[in-house]
Amino acid sequence: MDNPMATPAQARVDLAAIRHNVALLKERAGGAELMAAVKADAYGHGLVPSSRAMLAGGAAMLGTAFVSEALELRAAGITAPVLSWLITPGEPLDEALQAGVELSASDEPLLDEIAAAARRTGRAARTHLEADTGMSRGGSPLAAWPGLLRRALELQAEGAVEIAGLWSHLACADIPGHPAIDAQLESYETALKLAEQAGAAGSHVIRHLANSAATMTLPRAHYDLVRCGIATYGLSPIPEQGDFGLRQAMTLVARIAMTKRVPEGSGVSYGHLYVTDRETTLALVPLGYADGILRHATGKAEVLAGGRRRLVAGRVCMDQFVIDMGDDPLLAGEEVILFGPGAQGEPTAQEWADNLGTITHEIVTRIGSRVPRVYEGWGP
Ligand SMILES: *Cc1c(COP(=O)(O)O)cnc(C)c1O
Image 1 (cartoon, rainbow, N blue to C red):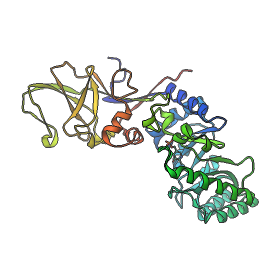
Image 2: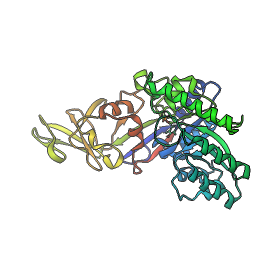
Image 3: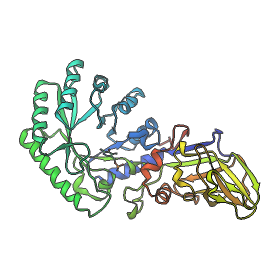
Image 4: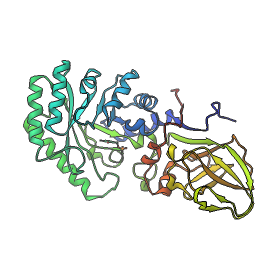
């Protein structure tokens, strides 16, 4: 058995693949710097080891949704610039400023909260102002943008805030040719022009707009910094356009808990959605929906077991599911691969996403905390 740690399942993360992907994205980004999006436990890959690999691969900055995620990076001793962009009123921002975490603001009330924390801590808050250029998620509507700029400049004059970035997010960069792309680029240009006119767009202010898809396909969106998530983990931001030379970092494996022969006509798992059509060998895989194997994978997703693909047979349960081996041998303790880069014939994360009608982001971020992340490829 090639698994030294006899856990029921593991998510193996190839850090060399992450470094390769970051380097490849940096090349695609031309002269722009790269921020690695490591929110949601680095898309399920493990926050701290993945972040270190991102930095080793050439990322200049890390990005998280929540402040708590940025503080976890600091607690691990990571000193690289970090931006958090999803802040809810009343969060303890003092700690963020003391830890040197850069903060995003989309409206004046949050900007005032950030400034108050800066006054309390005596630390000027490096702040990235977010414009809503057409995604209608976070960000300041352009109508409110001049007011936000004015307030930020006042707070900057006072020494509480330092305008560090001007940014926005694209809604349709993964749909090449979508009319919203040009509309958002134009709107972002307008936001930048307003900032220039207000005196808030000095040469040290970082302009950033692109996600992974835009980094790969929209040079006009690169500006000073690109924010890449999914592609750094080796998952294609635009699956219809192939893998862009990215290497999938995560391989999800499980060790068979038990096998048994059952007669023809055996109903398998809850609801008996699968019934054996002959005498056969069933094998029990110790991963379930609590571990991120969507219940919806019932009868849809495949795993590589005993050298061949096998469908999930019957309902995925909370902790386990069953595969039907027919007459092929498989022993308890042997390893099966749910998904990986595909080199051994296993399904890729993209195949899982396609079979389940979702995106790879959801496949990898849902892998639960019960599944240990095991790291490979630490070396240079
Ligand atoms: C998650 C996220 C990204 C990264 O997006 P990918 O499509 O995974 O590259 C970039 N910017 C923001 C604001 C995000 O929330």
